[in-house]
Amino acid sequence: MHLPRQRGPLHDLPDTPEAYDAVLAGVVEQALARITPEGNLEHPDADDDIGDTSLGVTSLLALAWQRSKDPRLPEAVHRSLAFHLRERVYREDNPGYPNLRVRDSGLPYARYVLEAGAHPIGDWPSTVWALLQAVNLLDLAEGLVEEEQRTELLEVARGYWRWLTEATFFNPQEAGNQAIGCVVGGLMLARHLPDAPADAMRERALRLYLDEIRAHRVPDRGALLPPEHRGAYDNNYGPISLSFLAQAHRISGEPVFAEDGDALARYIDARLTGGGFDNGGPRYSEQHSAFESVLGLRYFSARVGSDLGRYRGDSRWARYAAQPDGGVDGHFAWMLVWQIQDTTGWHRAPSTAPARHQLRAGTVSVAFDDRMTPSVIEAGGTYYLPAAVNRQHGFGPVLDGSVFCRPMGEVRVRDVRTGTLTAKLVGKPVVGRDHVLRHVRSLYVTDGTRLWTTVALERLPGEAYLLAGLPYAADDGDRVRRTATGAVASAGTLRLTHPRTKGPEHFDARAELTQEQAAFALAADPRGYGNPDEGWRHLVSSTAFEAGPVPDAPEDLHVFAVRYGSAEPLTVAVERTGEGLTVRTDAFTAVLGADDDRGEPTLTLRP
Image 1 (cartoon, one colour):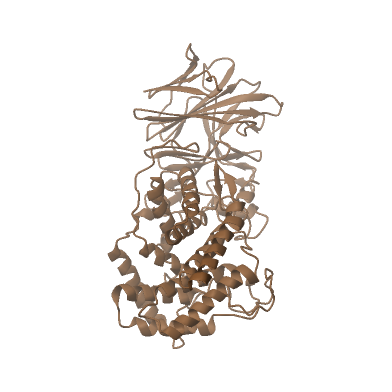
Image 2: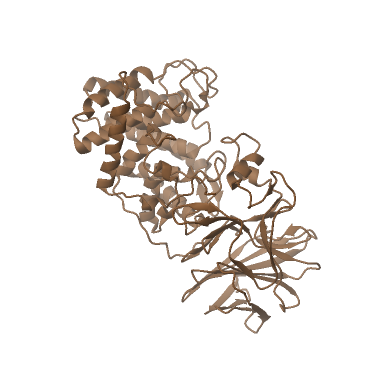
């Protein structure tokens, strides 16, 4: 079973002018075959996310005409724009819409669902999208759109902006991508206004960004991020926010958009495996965007100097939003327009600078969460998630049902690179059920193809083992598939266990259920509205690798050693020497020395 949306890296999509012209040519033929006598360009199967879609396809036709001068297009643009202005601009309040600040304003807006009162909650983002389609068409109107139509479209776009920022609460869904998109729409619209109104609109847009978005950023893994549905980051919408920040910086030059985009880009780089796999978010766990992310990932990959394009997207939306039959849907057309207009090239090499929340070399990577516990381990083409035991999640020593991975105090990190080896030492204070503060030291070493993990903590009475991860997915090159095993070895005993109890709180990797489906089943609200991260935290147990202690370790320590990426036998020797705690394998010797005068851990690594 393949994960439906974890497909190829986005930087593999051809992005030459010829490739984009071919995409637009395909859109043109679909649109000309689909357009109704009334000028409607909506996909016939679309029933939601619909209020802006015909206008979106119109903007793509306008871009195609600017590049090709296809004589069939001016009449299609005229008819389809007239259709939107006549049939898809609503001025009467949508019955049941809860987020209005001004009743009966008469301002135009776009509907998420066309039927009055059917599903008004999506009208705010639909109107943002309609504003963006409109300003793109205004940008492309020269020589194509007659003055009367252009003037009417401009007034509608100004009305969309006022409805979004005056008649309703701003960002009612607490979705960072929608909010930044609204700001982008205002900045782009301002370019079509006289000087004084333009200055006022730019100032208003920037103030909304500073006061309503930037001031409410959420911390995670050392970064401040635009909140997404009450969470710090969503792996579908976060990269879309990055694209909006890229466009905001492109059109305004305001440093704040570059600074915040750099921070979000570095965060994405740290949490993303080398193979491009990622999961987690307050709206979706595995529903990766595709072309909507290309602009931001490409623009900021160059700025931060890392290969963000390794992000795996949904190739079914490789160029534009599409219906199940593959037919073009104009819902995200504005992003394809910007992506084509921007000529930034991909930066394809990984960053060589150490990142606190990431260890990466070759085909091995570890992404660490805010507690410096691995959130994903990648080795040997397999992706491992934190396992669950007794409602506790993580990678770490387990004793009497308690997982020793949640820090009680400052977490210290030391990065070392020598020759072909890259290592990270993490030291954290933890508290067990006996309320005693203990020091857990976790060493991660990779040669680019395998990953060694050694964990040491003070010896406790009883039988301890290492919770060493939940094997979840494997890399098939252009697809990611589910798996329930992986190439793992331990210097002690090793067992792969599965939940003995059935039910949604117990995740068995051998089942067809995906992590996202399981997370939504445990979430408080329905799929698409519930928080899958919150749901996943309710998991009681899961498939897990469990490793026993290393034989002949110092008597006062529990020491565990595991290698990912190879199932060959693993021999590890651990002893105290004059230098410190010395760990020897067939690939390296590591010395966990005494803390320095600032209490920071020291690490020596020798091939």
